[in-house]
Length: 422
Image (cartoon, rainbow, N blue to C red):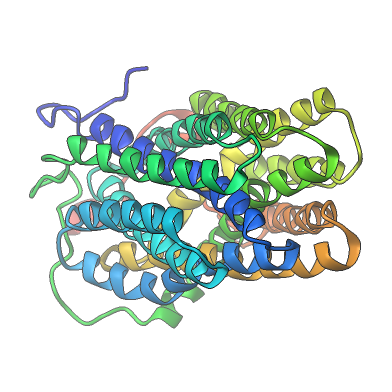
């Protein structure tokens, strides 16, 4: 795969994708391993939901301050900090002897992932021309999908046998080593001067309320929340479903990786899909189909049918994250883009706190398949937001303004008045 880069900038985007692949691979390997280790320590469905929610709790409070810092400074320092926290959280989760300790170190892992993602997304936004953002964010999120493809397979290969606690601990220690490999690609990713002018000069901070009231930002946050909640609960609860249905951990790992492979396939063909359908229609359609498929996972279907559902689900979920990034970046004020991305991540983490907690309650009352029905409802709601985005607004932009290149492939035109003033 060839990733486009700016002339003379070498391969910063490729190296960022490689680093993100290893960081995300470690997290994707660790998340099911945490669930299996918690089960070995005596956790029930409610406890699994709590541990999955704590993963997002620390990031929930840290996202906006990190975004504020990044708006008026460098992005790259957040990347190695994130890798250290991910590796430490994985390793200490593997040595933890109680559910409380596992929850705490899961939170550290989540904080590391947030730090890495805020820094990386801000670099992509800052070093990509507006007409390239859909494409570059799509390529950037391929790194996440590659990690989500390999991580569960590796976890499934290591976890199993009579001693589930020992093998899941080994998987967590290996995940820590995988995260550390990210350091090999974190050199000269951020450039002091870019086509978009670098970091915004220091000035009055744009109020969070103003950012959240900007057309496009709330809708992008909600769709991102719904899509990530689906991915997160699928990762945390498919092992539980597998245990109840007699599906081996290695097969569960392959199923999760199949979902990630379909996501990669989606992102490789995203540009022609955007040109044909437009951002709002594409988001609404894929969320609607994903919601229906999530509800179908609750049915006691055979493994081959479950694999087919996860392939369709992975393809549909691949649209939401990169396009919501572009939507938020292009809608936000220029001097608050990192903060807007951080608010999007805050919404993601809020979903990661609330959705697993709600899933745990639902699973405890109605069974382990019930959380997938809940996700189906959430994704259908996100599809409704996408439909409103395609039809609302007198300006024709709606909640999700199309990028100027998404349909025509041409760069955006600058209004004549602005060109004369500039």
